[in-house]
Length: 60
Length: 252
Image (cartoon, rainbow over all chains, first blue to last red; front, side, top):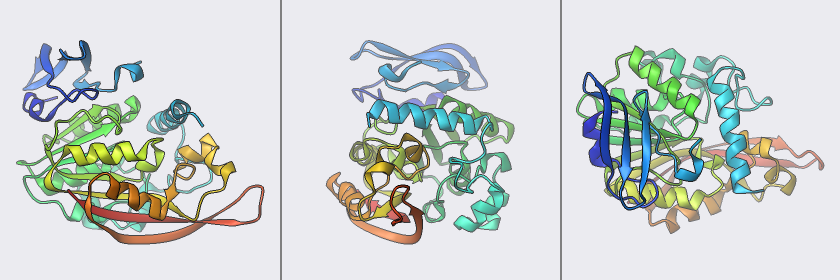
């Protein structure tokens, strides 16, 4: 995912802001990292550039 | 039928399709056979189709060419249930480099496939994320247009999908969806068949109920732009059930 898309991203559960943590970035794209919702205290993974924003109960 | 079970069956079916272990969303329909031809029949223009990666055209769904034709340069578009991404790529060509198209799908295999097509073909204005259309991972009032092609019928909670779409749209934003609805209530044996759900039939709402749910979610000026009928045979009875493939537009 690209950083600029953070503007419109929200937690799927509470719709609150997400905090981005970057583990690996390549050509302006975040390859691995996470999106943390402080309200829900839940961290959504970014794997192979794709944010997994399925609600926690649907996470594999 | 339990909501969770419906989701599992639908997810499993579309994961198989993404891996091409299965060509069509259901054994009985022909929507996977010659996907490109199918896409043309649905109403996408040859010119539009020439400019999207062919592997993204899986021929699934009822087609949403009107929604694509409507998009303007620079718009932010959200595709609910983006699959392999055909509508996302078509939309991306319309909104251009200053616009953005975001595809949301709950099936990992489909999102992976769409993402690799985007990468191979150098699409910079598209993004895919794993997510549920009942719990959209986007901010309030952040999107100009929401599109969806034959997906909402697969959701066990359609009013939630429409409420979420309303929330995500900017004021004045528009929703243009194509979907399957029934005329008259579906027989119970179809409604309770998870296979029929994955085939886009079991979860089809009655036509007027579908429109009512959109209105009740807050949308205004709800219009049916096109409607095409087809029939399915009931298993136990000889009765035919009339289904409609409709395109609806509504405004926030």
